[in-house]
Amino acid sequence: MERNTTQFLDLSTYIDKLDIIGDIHGCYHTLVDLLYKLGYKNINGVWQHPQRIAVFMGDYIDRGIYIPQVLDLIKNMVDNGKAIALLGNHEMNLIGVYTLDRNGQPLRSHKKLRQHHVTIRVLEENNLHFWIEWFKKLPLFIDLGKIRLVHAAWHDEYIDIIKHYFPDNYLDGNLTLAFDRSSQISKALKYILKGPEILLSPDILGKLKRIQPSYKLKEARIRWWDNIPDNPTFRQATLLIPIDEKVPEDIKALYKPYPEEAPIVFFGHYSLDSDPHIIRHNVQCVDFGVYKKNFLAAYRYNGEQVVKEENLVYVPYNEQDIVLPSPH
Ligand SMILES: [Mn+2]
Image (tube, rainbow, N blue to C red; front, side, top):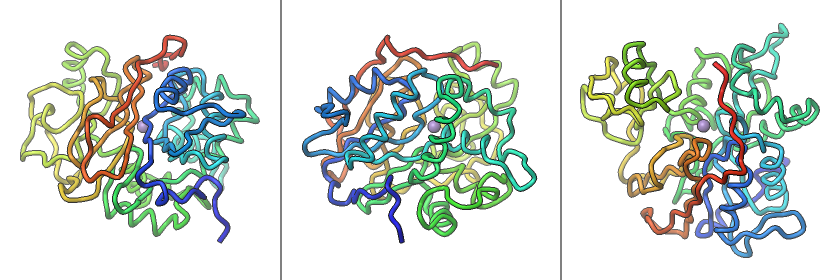
């Protein structure tokens, strides 16, 4: 089997030398700040560390305008064996709006193009198609035994479905089922790339707008790693929703808590707006919301059994990065 160039690096050789970097969303200057802080240098156009490997957790595009620079930097590292880049839900969405089914219809509705307005504006059309092909080759998850890496959420059964459907671990072949919401493979991809969610009612959204004006989603993201109590409140069951009303759905049907004794799982996606902190001994989010002008974070993994606060390295949003609001 021909090896996919984005996955040729044997990460198991670097298991105790990984720098796991959160969602960048076009914030190139902040990324350079973080790489400097981690001891990486630009040598002949390739950012690198003498001993370590970077793992990028997906969501390179949308929101910030320096997307071409971010993509070039990451692809150069990947091509030179200095980094691995995972697929994020934003890249998956972009693939969907530009891939046609056999009737010539996009796999993901063009009504969803608005999410990508910055990406489409800053990439030339040719480059847009080049990058979409590159995204299709990015790994969907990585399981190194001792640690696991995925854009949003880990779920053993869904990972097994993905392994079965995409044995090369990237979005190759016919993607129709992957974007058909009723299929098992689309549910599996949605879980690992977006994490489990609940749709918010207009009533809850209204309350949220008053207490948390920065909240822009229509869904609530479930704390999937937690053993959430029965009949929980939004505050207990979700992220970034400090409301003490009960969740009206059976939350247990929507997610599977991540076991306390499982390997450490690293993910991005959640754009947390607090200071970077440890989530749980075997659960670590590395996305602290750079596009919200918070932090770009990395976890420096050195082979430990439980995550440690001192291995979180982060830099504040760099004002040279320009983030454009999503149109409504
Ligand atoms: Mn994401």
